[in-house]
Amino acid sequence: MDINRENALELFNEWIDSESLIKHCLAVEGAMRGCAEEFGGDPEVWGACGLLHDIDFQKYPDSEHLEHGPKILEEAGYPEEFIDAVKGHGDFTNTPRETKMAKCLYAVDQLASFIIAVGLVRPTKLEGMKYKSVKKKIKDKAFARAVDRDEMKKGADELGIEFKDLVMIVVNSLQKREKELNEMGQSLF
Ligand SMILES: [Fe+2]
Image 1 (tube, protein in one colour):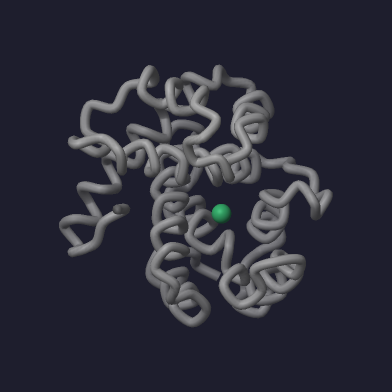
Image 2: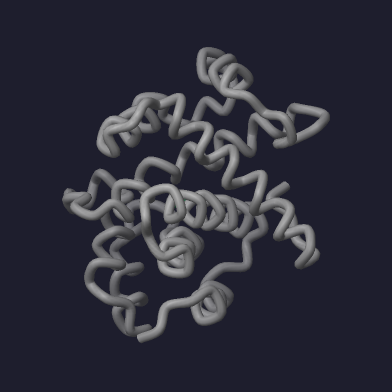
């Protein structure tokens, strides 16, 4: 199948209409598009992977998350490598993250949402955001406490890059995506 944003969005809309989950998936999509440029992937495919990674999460939010997603994607015609990347973003599935796409998805899933949370408390949102602002919030244990700091850092380790560099790749990707989304009448916020 030809993987692109248009058909990914069609499937996405069949399964997800929760506003918070839409925002999360748009952020991960944006981060994955940026990672594709950085690591030599196809932005349409990697973006679709980000958009669809939580496809079953609204209907099956708890212990069944990622039990149904792979089947939904398989029936829609997505290839094994794509589905393995989606499975791999949940440590509990014990799916090895073998491709750069899988490693990136794991690395940006929580980080993208964390950066959006940092943006929410800044008057200029993502604009001019430096690593320093993110680092300060990571140290603040009360801030976005649901986000596992170790997991975000593990993602950078698996990619073999400095955490600081990963943060800035995601910040830059989200800045760019926010501009593009604004033109489509949407926002990450
Ligand atoms: Fe996610």
